[in-house]
Image 1: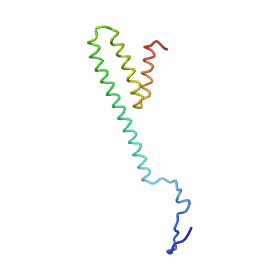
Image 2 (image 1 turned 90 degrees about the vertical axis):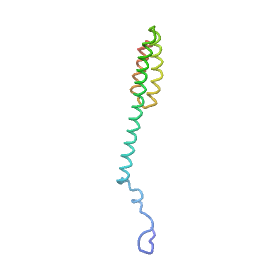
Image 3 (image 1 turned 60 degrees about the vertical axis):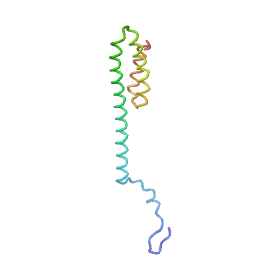
Image 4 (image 1 turned 120 degrees about the vertical axis):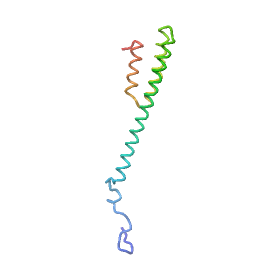
Amino acid sequence: MTQNKDGGSEGKSFSTIFNHETSQVDQQVEELQEKLEYQKDARKEDQFFFVVVCVILLNVVFFSVMPTFGGPLALLLLQLLILIPLARKMGMEEIATILSRVIDRIAGKS
């Protein structure tokens, strides 16, 4: 290290450059990032549940209008095929797994 004219050193020492202690600002940034991620996940869950509620309401309407039993089953299968990728996209793997099992049961696979 070289000394400047005031007697202090110009460069930083190795220990101060690579100090791994987290400052209060770093901790706050990390906490805020975690809260933001939680809020994003919660928003995605809310959006998925909104879609599911809309599908259920549409099912009530369609099932009451369709006179045969085959139409509602075909519609239900189609809706499940749409909801599974949507659940995966929104980060809800547990629900996607459950819906996949429902389709497997409907298709006769064990």
